Structure formats: structure tokens, C-alpha cells
Length: 495
Image (cartoon, rainbow, N blue to C red; front, top):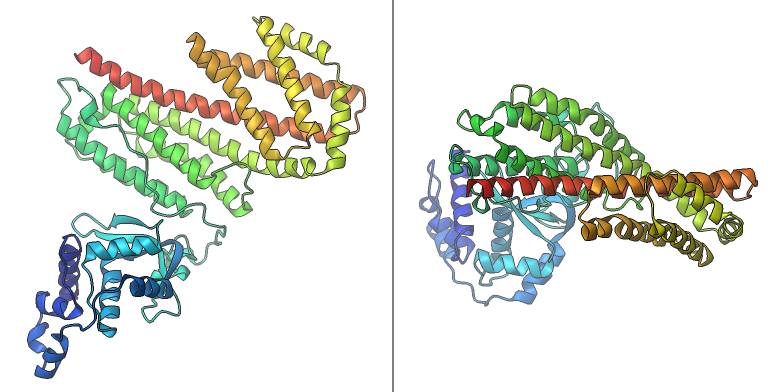
């Protein structure tokens, strides 16, 4: 076993260099011997066979054809880079052709599998490079269930005995395992206070990025329960020389920015769009995870600075709200899609919409607002007209969501940028106007017994949730920007 580890480590080092052994025979010759194994054990005839120089030059088309026949795209499957290179050397030996070095072989692989990613996995000192998103075909002579699609049938390939008795969560993979987090802020861009060690902050940031990447990979595999173990292990096992900086304002803000990046990545890979139907099994585990995250964070950070706890809990709460909103929206969108897909229903909705007393509803809506101007009146009338056009065109659900996104951008984001006013205040005013107008439209249809009342009520629920989802997402992004500005503010103060 020790000899195998030595050979694997040696091969991994070879793969990290620009030059590589040119044949399987050279691997046997150059590999360090251990436990009595190595080239000395080869017979004279074996040596002549192993040292035979290949008679055919390297052929990229032939290699690409071999890759196509041997491997396939497989979500969530990883193969050690050294293992795949050994397969290639064996293929070259059997075909009496000259192999290329590891770097060139990596380029050939990406010609066949352009979306392949590379990750370094394993514990410190024992990590190895792996290819993500590729598996060995069952018809291949190198077939191994560990490196095949079958490996992902149980939570990303990690089959555990204690999980056998638990019900399996089955749903299509939402994203590739190995999805990398966006870049975290760089410590070099900040001027830290004199009492904060830059080296310690850099060390912590590297540790924290690794921690966040593990959480992202675990969530993608739907192993939500393992997040609790990661949280406990990371925060309660914090090195003593790092603990003092955790309460500093700059590090607390830095953690907040990183958490915002992590949560946005998780939301994006779990539910890329709320218009897509979610399997019930995934919906259940997401909702369970949303209920437990706050409790897990509190238990793992109970002995850490209060300011750090407050920022992490605040961002986690916002993240949970977005997750819950996304799951409920997914169901509402599917029901709304059915309604909008029927020409008869949308035609009836258009007729009922034109009978609404929009003038009276607009006046009632503006009366409930603390402050309003002529612009608010025109905004409501414009939105009313745009919605009518969508009904008239019998537009699909996607067109309505694009319209809602445009509405939030015009009425909140752009106004905030122009007037430099509080996003929170402006969002509240808009949501009040939006809620009042929608409620009064439903009330008017109820009083007039509109035939399409049920369809409007369903769309009203979906629209409300979608607008709230957009606003909450904007506020979460703004919160992260505030934390980032706070860090830069500290740097300015330091100057």
C-alpha cells in the first residue's frame, strides 16, 4: 500500500511539470522502487519489451476518437488526473504510438470536453488534481464504477452505510459539482488597521474560502445535513492566533461580503431560475435546510465575537428568505404558466381587465401613500397599459417576469441611482404602492363577479412574490455593497 502511495505521489508530481514520461515503459523505469518492486524485478525479455521505442508518431485525431469512445460527460463525477493519464499511456502502448506529455494531453482532453473543470481535492499534503464532469463509459476497458455515472446515484457519489436506511432524494442535478465561487475580496486592496496582522487576515481568508467552497459543493450534492458539520468544524476549530482578529470591524465586514458571495452562488446553482419546476424532494430538503441554518450558525459560533455573529446571522436570514421565496415562486410560476397558456382564459382576462375602473383605483392607491407626485400617477397608468398589452399579445410567462424585472429596475434601481436616496425607503414606498393597487384591482373584480377572478388572483399572488423576490435580492446585494464600502472606509480612515 505504501508503494502505491509513493508511485501515485510521484506521478502527480510528473503531471505538474511541463515535461512528462513519454511512455508507460518510462513510467516503470523512472518510478521510485519500494518494497522490492520496480524495474529490477523485470525479466530480461520484459525489459526488452518495455523499452521498445514506439514506431508510430502521436496522432491527435486518434486520441480524440479514443476519448470519445472511452469517456462521457457525467455530472458530478471526478477522476484523478493521474489515473486518466495512465489510461492514456496504456492506450498509446497498445497502439504502439508516441504519447504526449501531461500538459499537451490536458489540452487534447479539453478539445473533446470543452466544459471540463479541474479541481485539487484531498486533505492538506495529500491533495491531487481531479477532472470534474467526465466519467468512464461502461463499455470502456478502464470502467470503474467509482469513475462512472453510477457513482452519482447517491448524493454525488459519496455512498455511506449509515445513509442506506434514509430515503433517497432524487432529482436532476442542478449544477456541476466543482462549481467555483466567484473571487473574494483581496486583502491587498485593503489598508488594515495597525493592530491587525495582514498575514493573519490572509491566512483566515484562504481558510474561509476553502470552507465556503466545501459548503457550496456539499449543497450542490444535496448533502445539506453535512453543512452543520462543516460549520462546527471550522468555527470551533479556529486556530488560536486567528481568533483575536475575528472581532475587528474589517474582518467582520470581510466575512459578510464573502457570505453574500457564497449565498448568491448557492441560490444560483440550486435554482437558476424560478420559472423552472422543482422536484418535490428537492423542495423539501431546501425548506428543511432553511429552517435549520440559523440554529446551526448559532451553535457553531456561540463563543465567537458578537459582532461577527450578528453579521453572519443577518446575511443568513436574508439568504433563507430568498430560498423560501424561490421555492414558493417555483410552484406559483408553474400554476400561472398553465393559466397563461390558454388563449380562452387570457382573452377573458383581457375583457375583465378593460372593465376595471383604473382611474378610481389609481386615486385610492395614491391616497394611501405618505408622499406622491405626478410621476407616481403616470407610473401606475403606464404599468396598467403594459400589462394590458401582454394580455392582448397572449404573452408567455417569461414575458411577464421580464416585465416585472424591468418595472423594478425603472421604479427602484434607476431612481435610487439618480436621486441618491435610500434604497430601503424607496423600495418600501414602491411595495406599498404595488400592494395597494393589486389589492384594489382584485377587490373591483370581486365586486363585479369577473369570470376570470380566479386566474387574476393566481397571477396576483405570483406577481407579488416575484416582485418581493426581486426587491429582497436587490437589498441583499446592497447590504453586501455596504459592507464592502465599510471595509474601504476603514482603509480610508487608516490613511
